[in-house]
Structure formats: structure tokens, C-alpha cells
Length: 196
Ligand SMILES: [Mg+2]
Image 1 (spheres, rainbow, N blue to C red):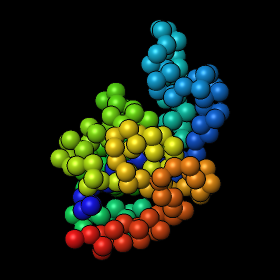
Image 2: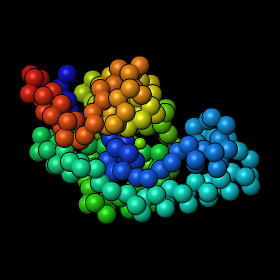
Image 3: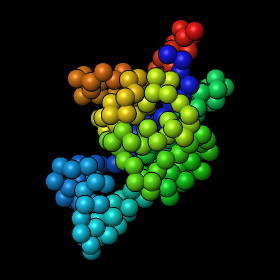
């Protein structure tokens, strides 16, 4: 495989954001469904009310976002290597713009939830691959959660890199788990060095 592109998740992956997803799901009463799918399935006026609650929580959390240690170096490295960088997030365009501006980050393609393609579906990843003219085998996914793994699986992308402290939580998956962005960068370097 020649690595030509990486699709990053945003929250928890590129930036640390203080989300308490368990509490948010309780507050929205999502009944175990993915949040966006759940809200979109509701009738009005409940749907708009729940969107408002979610947006408020997301906007508050986004203001507290911190760039992950080593992320800028990784993105610079990928740029030097000519590897395409994309962002696929279930967050809103407003919050994506805030994060990209705040940390002065550049991606070749950014997909936010307004497109209507949401993880854990593989659709947002496939959409990006098409836009960047990349094959599944040429890409890897970098995320921080089981949502990212599910999406990559569904899209048929087999190289899945997860940034997470809790390795055990991912032991049943084929994803490679990294504690730090520095470790992830080393792995990517290794891939680039061993390919033809
Ligand atoms: Mg995430």
C-alpha cells in the first residue's frame, strides 16, 4: 500500500475537547441511538429543541478545545510528504471553522455534519475519498472512538489508527491504538519508509 491520504476525526483526535458524551446522551434521552440520527428522527418541535441543546453543549465544549500535543508537527510532516489530509467530523461547520482558525490548521478537504453524512456510517469517508480521488487502500483513518472504527470498517478502509489512552477498550478491534500523536507519527513514518 502506498499511503496517499489520511482522514482525521476532529474532536478527541485533532483537538482535546471536554465532552461528557454519556451525560449529553442522558440529557438528550437518545435511547442508545447515535445522537445525530436520533435527533433527526424526531418530530418537530422536539427535533429543533434537541438540536439547540446539542449545539449549545458543543459550542461550549469547542471554546475549551486544545490542540493535541504533536498534532501540528504531524500535519506539517504529512504536508512535506505530500500526503492528503482530510477532516471528517460529526460536529458543525461553525465549530470546525472555529477550531481550524484558532489553531491555524489546514486540511485538503473538510466534511462537517451539514452534508448529512455522519459517522458511524462509512458514507462520509467514502465521500471524502471520492473528492480527493483516493482509493481505500491508499488511505488510513485516524480517530479516537469506536464510531471512527465502525465508519472505517463500513467504508472498507483497513488501516485504522486510534488515539486513545485506553487500549483495552479497543482490544476486540483490528485498529492500532496509540497513546500519543508522537507514537502515531512514528508509525506513519514507518509505513512510508517500508513502502515501494
Ligand atoms: Mg472523536
